[in-house]
Length: 300
Ligand code: GUN
Image (cartoon, rainbow, N blue to C red; front, side, top):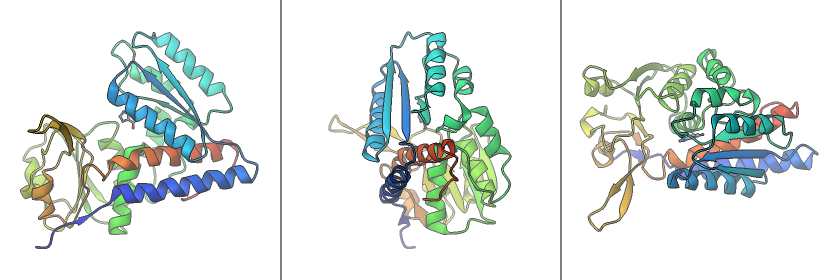
């Protein structure tokens, strides 16, 4: 069988970033507000620092304002809540992103619920989680939707067109990825199965999937013979592993070389889902700004 078609998330994300940038320019040229994104990082985790910096940098590249807040690891929950309250009240801030994970002494749920749902560009506030969880099939996504899941659904719709009636299997039930991906695929009329560590005969469940989305954070966990011939495989994993030369490289949650021989479409790691997350964050920030200005959501 021919090798799977690569789903080029890097290229798609580049196009999306450009369209968001054009949307920002259009909004501002018509006298609308300049979108503002506030990022909040508590602690000094190096990977989180890289992510947060890249978000702020891209926001500025697309014509937005970026407000970066770096707080020490021992910041109290009360101080973090006070910052969120100030950002909620600041009209120059349209989007608020609190980088996760937070230090253990801070109750993440308490922080997420404190963010104004209209500024919740991560889509993690219970109001937005509830909106996605109760959305009608095909209804517009006119509220913030978690960025990585939104990116996954955009890539699938671009690669396959209509998803109606397809069997989708999601490996992983996290609030960040697995659950919201499942909701988006249900909205697109897929028949959705969510699997997890207690699922019986996971390989057999995966082999029934026309769409297989893998987000469990385990290096090359899904093998080639778990993939149905011709299936679309979306690998959300980003795992850093050492190379024999003493360096490191990124690999996904899917054994790519094996799966590529069987699948119809597959995302590479890196260059698949990864670049979509930050592009969708910019998309959500533009939409939140339009919403605050009383303008309708625009498809970009
Ligand atoms: N940490 C890992 N992914 C994400 C994300 O999408 N948003 C936030 N806020 N933190 C994260």
